[in-house]
Each structure stands twice: as structure tokens, then as C-alpha cells.
Length: 344
Ligand SMILES: NC(=O)c1ccc[n+]([C@@H]2O[C@H](COP(=O)([O-])OP(=O)(O)OC[C@H]3O[C@@H](n4cnc5c(N)ncnc54)[C@H](O)[C@@H]3O)[C@@H](O)[C@H]2O)c1
Ligand SMILES: [Zn+2]
Ligand SMILES: [Zn+2]
Image (cartoon, rainbow, N blue to C red):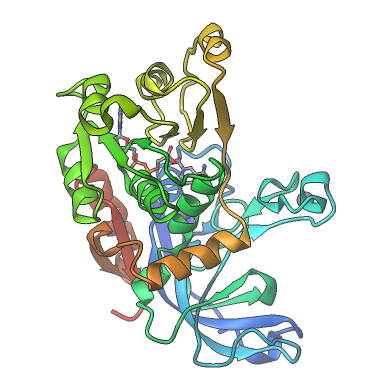
């Protein structure tokens, strides 16, 4: 089978390795024929040598969809021919967070494509407990986008009940876009998404997020007044990863409200702790997802509550993995989600 290995930054090597076969499966494992892989923002950092926790050489690919080829003797969740994906989280099952059901923050967490090998090859083996099945008519491209969608679903779950609340999402990249869509699907009253790129805001509109503002042109405070009137907003999501973004959320959100920090900050922001206390704000972290977030993502996408179509910007055949990264680097805000097609 083919395998793409990121041997060192900016260098993916294509190898021919022995096929994985049904004979290798243990009782609870499933053999998948990988069909589509989404390229993730963090993998772009690994590709350029800017991800501090990537172990090279590594097989990338943790956003993928495939078809079940064979299942171990005790597998009950799926059958050959089923469309599936699986969570990429390898956890210990023994630490405090794991015992509490917070295995997404396992003390020994390893993520496939970063600290363990991922799915950038023709066949991949996964255990049943991390497997998620799609409906038969589900798009395989959407299947490859369940992972980022699950990030959106989990981020939104971290804010508690959104029913009847107004929401601001700061940052309209793929993740911010999905956070905004899941916030709406979770019952938010009105959702306003912000960015500094008109292109990204246009994509948000195509996904059905009506309220957008380019904060380089209109101050957030003005946009909030225009969209929410005197109601203000009660939940914020920081998905841009820059100081000005988190600061403006803290300064404009209603007192006593919650801000979920989704973005990974390359540089720590300077924030007023006085302000945090005086306004009794709650700042909440969020890390990847739980299994139920994958299930929620599949359900909401299948039901049409989340629109992924405008997010797919380009497709590259497997052999052009390197070209895909070069395209992304040359088209920063034009690119939302690039799909590697193993069948092309
Ligand atoms: N918490 C998690 O589990 C998790 C999972 C995946 C990704 N992430 C993080 O989420 C963040 C977003 O991911 P992405 O793939 O969408 O990244 P991205 O870089 O595509 O999106 C960030 C967006 O923020 C915009 N932006 C920049 N300055 C802004 C400002 N002042 N106000 C509003 N918007 C501004 C950018 O134009 C861009 O569109 C990243 O930091 C990523 O590492 C977190
Ligand atoms: Zn990802
Ligand atoms: Zn653990």
C-alpha cells in the first residue's frame, strides 16, 4: 500500500509498504480503506516545522473517512462496506482525567499524526471504541471533516446552555466557522462572527451565518450594537488566537458572561485580571473533543444543520500532498479546507 511520511519539515516521502490485512486484526479492531483526508491547521504547522509537539518522521492524517474492509471477531458497531472515521486520540485510561471521562485531556495523551502515526496511507487499523459510523448516503468529504466539526461541537458544549443567548465568535477560519454553526444549531439566539478577512466572512455567510463584521473596518462595539441592539451578548468564542481579539471580547461581553478560548495562542496575551474579576467573567478552555462530539457532528451534518460545502476549497490527489501544502502556504485566507483524495 501507499504511505505518505513527513520525514522532516517540508518533505513528504512516498513509500510502498506491506498492506495491512484482516489477519492482523485483534478481536476489537477494524481495518479501513482510507478514501479522503482533510489537511488540518496544526498539520500545516508540523509540515513547516512550527509545531513543537510533532515527532518526525510521522505519517500525517487525522481527519479522514474510509470504508470498512474487515472487522475483528468481537466487533459489533460496523460491517464491511460501512462508511466510517475514528477519533485520533490515544489515551491511558488510568489517569485522573481519564477516570473522570475527560480522556480528551488524558495526562498521557498522544494524537495520531503528531505523536503517533496517522492515516495517510491506503489502509488503517482502528479499535472499535474510537470508531464512528456514517449514514450510507453520507459524503466521504464530509466524513473527512468530522474531526474539525467535532472541535466546533465540543467548544460549544463548553459554554453550557446557549438557548436564547446571543453569541460572538471572533475568528472565521475553518474552526471559528464551525463553532458559529454549532452555536446556532445548539439554540443560540443570534450569532455574530468576526474576522479581518472579507473572504472568510463571505464563506461564513455562504454557510448561513448571517451576521458578520470585519473588525478592521467596523469596531466590534458598533457591530454588537447593530446586531444585538440593547440585548448585548452572553457567550463569546475566541478562535483567532491574537491578543486584540480576546481583549475586545472581554471588553464588550455582558457582565457575568462566559468566553470559551478555542484558539491556540502562539504568544500569550496581556489581559486585565482586574477586569475579569470586576465583570465576573468566566474564561473556559477547550481541548479537541469527546466521542459524543463526533456523534453530534455526524448527526448535525446529516440533518443539514451544519453546512460544510463552502468550506472545501481544494482537492489534491494523494501523490500531490507536498503540492497541497505549497498551495495552502501561497493562499492563506483563500484556503479553508483542502482534501487529499486517495482515489483520484
Ligand atoms: N481547542 C482545540 O481543541 C482546537 C482544535 C483545533 C484548532 N484549534 C485552534 O483554533 C484556532 C483556529 O483554527 P483555524 O484552523 O480556524 O485557524 P485560522 O488561522 O484559519 O483562523 C483564524 C482566523 O482568525 C482571523 N483573525 C485574525 N485576527 C483577528 C482579529 N483580531 N479578530 C478576528 N479575527 C481575526 C484570521 O483572519 C483567520 O481567519 C487555531 O489557533 C487552532 O490552533 C483549537
Ligand atoms: Zn485537525
Ligand atoms: Zn489518561
